[in-house]
Image 1 (cartoon, rainbow, N blue to C red):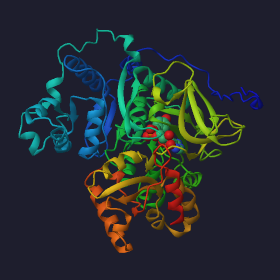
Image 2: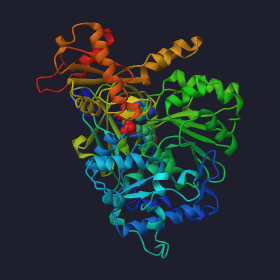
Image 3: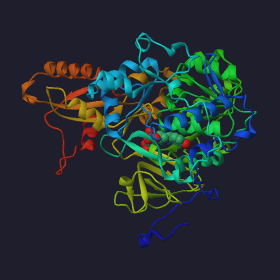
Image 4: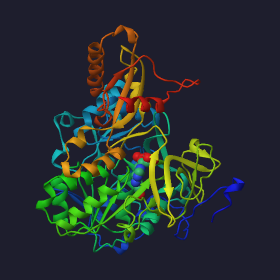
Length: 552
Ligand code: AYL
């Protein structure tokens, strides 16, 4: 497994799991492979705290009638958009992806209409491009704007005649892109990541092997993660359905509703991000619910500090509950899972993201692309053992550079210790600094700008004093907020006093709020400076900005 590092050869780490062949089928075939083994009347998706649910049979019928309905008019690639987007964010994705049709829930229709109008679509064209997507039984299925009329409804697209069950899906589709999730790279604006049918087939099967075993009759999953993000899409929409396990959906994170959902549906597996675990530890709300059905809590999408996991374990035990708290690590660009912690290692390896998933091969390298000695931190590069279709731009001789710094222990478990790339994660939401910079540069008084992520202080001060030691350890890891350094267009000298600079900074901080999604707000503040540090090539030296932030 290890080659001699003195020769400068690669040190390649392989999984402890046997490789498996990735099926070259349409994703539909993979998702419904075992469908006939499960009760068609059993629930597949349940909306928490409502009476809305879909049985497996209803999912099958809807999927097929929509697929055959849209196939007549559309292609089959979907780009899911962040529901928190302001029109500027949505406009970028619409333009960049070249999407024509927009499927939208009635409550978000105004944002879509404004975005399309902003992109130059006429009112008639807007009516042609928008599809109102809601089930009839949903309470909010209609709004005044929808009633005002003339919109294409989801129902209109369903091909209810032949469901096409007899028509085989073509395996040539396996290498076609099925989704374009928007994600930021190591630098720059967010881009659509091409995920193919085969990529998802691989993810589903790898999860079946590396996730603790779940069974159709015994288990139920709850999730709050949005379906436009690859974590929600892969781990909530696709994985549970493919193994016959119902999913309870929480449209937003409300801790009391989340806990009542666990109690009501006897949830065995909860999929979360670290800030939700923090809420589970610190709020009194969970104490009034019975969470004893839980067996597995999986965290992913952002670093989970060891202390946070240990505190959650303690709290659950104090409530008579016990779950294995595991962590998965992945990226949109790796479709997505790279590692997963085994349930048996939940306590002994808390804080670790676990072993490589099947078919994943990794290296840890230094800044010069040289493999580091075993046990040393290095940037994680990974490659799939079989041909794979993800972002070409990021391949170096077939190796995909994650931008994350990791260490590997003797048991083959990885620990993510730092991030090399520019990406800021507010909670588990991506904020590409270049995105915010592009918006800020549209302000008439902004001359130049550099955005970085800094540690948040407000959240830590809200926590109980007895937890302070822990808080410091994990706040550093994930309570990041966005902070902008700005050079006024009229020059730094035009704002000679501290007071004037602060006033300008506040104006900018408020101004951005109408322009971007909430997770991109400049919660870390705005600082007026003389010049943004740049490299000879003109790129922003964010490392220097981060040093400035440390001095403040
Ligand atoms: P994106 N620990 C530390 N950092 C993490 C972790 C983790 N467990 N998971 C993700 N990240 C960071 O594209 C890391 O910096 O995909 C990584 O490069 O939104 C970046 O988030 C990627 O962000 C699964 C399925 C994890 C999904 C996911 C989340 C994918 C997030 C495991 O099995």
